Image (cartoon, rainbow, N blue to C red):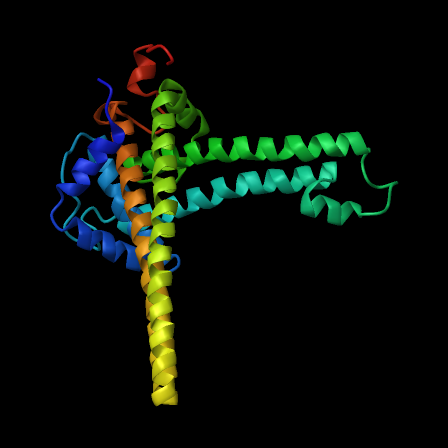
Length: 289
């Protein structure tokens, strides 16, 4: 049965008691580098792992609950997987740029004016077009790899499970359409986030205009007080804007990670054996979709 990933994830979030407060707290934590990210992804991936196992439960009551004892290791491993996956396209682009003499790094190392060092013009022109396309395609692939790696890591509780290229590729190949549906959902959520940020930005610009107008009016009466009020109000509005956009981004992350749990559930997680063993659909000889 084909599942609607967004509707299923959204229903689970909406039916979780106090989900708005949890989302706002996670948004605050995301402002804390490293530690905040570890907690948030450890929490959300634990929830996604539950639905992958077929355990349908609301968001855990406590963000720092760590009921299974793996909240922090799970979040840390997710960060490591993301770091490695994000580094792959960058390394390919850097090496390709150096070898082919295109891109910022390549042009810098080959030299701008030394014709004896620069590759042939036609080759360089083709490379300048092809290399970005290759890097873009690779970025998409490793993004999917990261998602599936997260889920395998969350299920097994080991970092190595998130880097099993063969097992991850087998899962992606078995239902690549499902991964693409989640990717399409992430694009829509990203577009909605940008639109929401623009609308909110326009509203806050109006508010800032009024703040500056009031501050200027006060400065006529009380110079120092008016300026201070204007500065404080200005900073408050900017911080509120940044936090609101962060909250929207956190909601998007909640939906995507939960959807990944639903996608993983189709692989009959309770029947999984060791992380190196074939998965049930492989043992059953299921055709590749």
